[in-house]
Amino acid sequence: MGATKIEFRMRMLIMTAITVLGFWAPWIEFWGIGRRETLWAWLAFGLGRAGAVPIAVAAPLVLLAGALMAAVGAVLRVWGAAWLGYATVHHKQMQGSAMLTDGPYRSMRNPLYLGGWCMMAAMSLLMPPTGALFAIPLLTLFYLRLILGEEKFLAGQLGEPYREYLRAVPRIFPRLRTLLTQIGDRPADRKPQWLHALITEINPIGVFVALAFFSWSYNNWLMIRAIIVSFGISIVVRALTPVAKEEAGTAE
Image 1 (tube, rainbow, N blue to C red):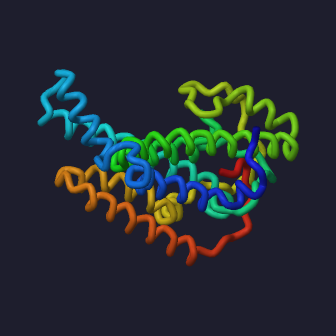
Image 2: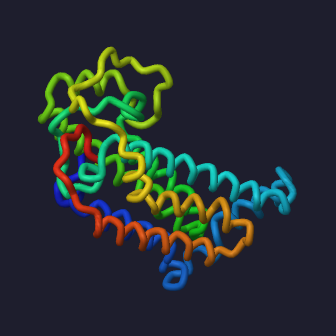
């Protein structure tokens, strides 16, 4: 079942609430469910106790995996936003005036949602294990609802060309060799807005920086603060960025 218009309009607030609850994990103190430790430490000690790798190696290995996941998320978010455009990415309503089959949209239909999921997966390493167990499945379900809602909307707006696009391009996981035979209807002058995308997608970049550069201190609060700062900057940037009218394809 697809997301409602209200869910789509409030998607940023809902995703932020899920993230905050994942970090807070109030059920630990209130009901004694889980322990106040980080997922990355829990995984590292688990690998060490299982004898897979020494504990001294397990911790940086887990954090490196998190940094790589954050890097994938940041690349997908910036790449997708550059082609889709700021106005469409952050619009309060679904947009579907034209097809977009350039950039990452030739290989996958939802690079922004996949990038957002990778970003959350990386951040979940800083949550308590029960917080991550709450946040990741709930965010996955919410993303799927958003995707299904957009597909229904775009199929109604764009008709058979979009349905052909659905058959040719995977929903989530990219296909290395595209089955598209031609570029969809789009403005002839559409070009990726790389600088704009880099500025407006500061938050996923900040998550990558936190995991890649601050994790080696093993200071969980320092990494969380770096993410909070990047999130705050992204909110300010979005508030100051004018929303121009754009022709766009899929909305995420």
